[in-house]
Length: 166
Image (cartoon, rainbow, N blue to C red; front, side, top):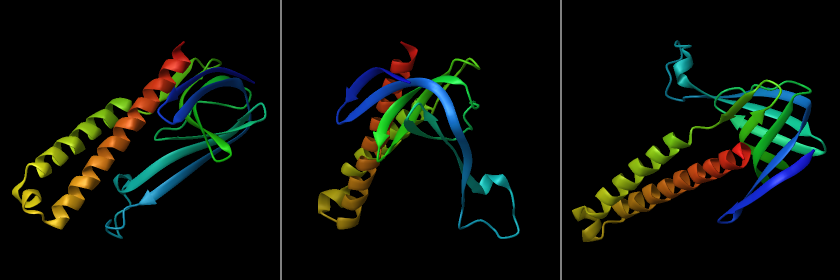
């Protein structure tokens, strides 16, 4: 295992780690929409996260993606992400053995951030906020926070992609 590169974006330090996959454990985390009809078993009502936990040398790695990671025991990979609690959280990876590179879609996050920011601007210009009503101000605050978080997450993923591609 070797830590190849490091980058810092605001307070989050993005690192890149290379090594051989060992102790691979793939899981599926599934959330059910509470408003789903009980007789309908369509997959549209489920939110799936594919979780891969493995070791690169002595480092514990955890990856949560909307699609399963294409890795196997013994593959030589490079992951890029940040340390959270005791595990390294993967934002992007490059599997040299299978010649696969993947990451979450940062473009969708940017578009979502823009949408929430536009809604917040619309609320900011509304008469209800100008009159001092509390609920529109709370919505304005909430939409702004969501837009900032989504934009920040997209920047983290872009930085992780840059570390892997170099």
